[in-house]
Image (cartoon, rainbow, N blue to C red):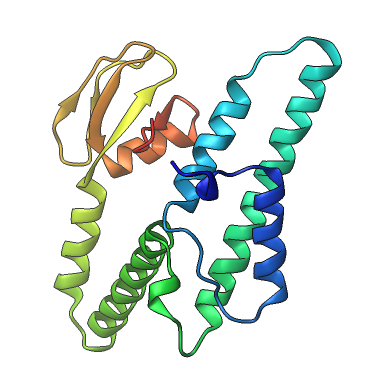
Length: 185
């Protein structure tokens, strides 16, 4: 990584200021978020005693706040910009926009099916969603369950990882018996 791509609190603060002072989406280093993640990770790994540790923890909180603010500002600009400069979007921002586009498509699909009387299609969508499998990690022991797909799952021990139907996973997550496994986990 070259010196110009190094992230520190000052460069992050400067990026946030530049983005807030400008109406259009600014071009920033394509690796900005990855470099920022490395900076935060390295900062969090540092171990100090006493006051130095409190200072480090405060710095980490400040960097996290600035990061959240920068992302919110950029996403707000992206959503409100009629003539967005696509080349200024970072890959991580494109990832977010992709999910928003998928949400719009799904909304249009449901509205269209509803207003066109396609109840069987809606029923099929609902059933497919209920039985769509997701990965969860168990926080407590759970006896065998019958899934929304009528298959048997379990029993499970604490810290077990399993792929089960969405509807069952959501019920377990709501009861704090399990947690969804995310890509970064």
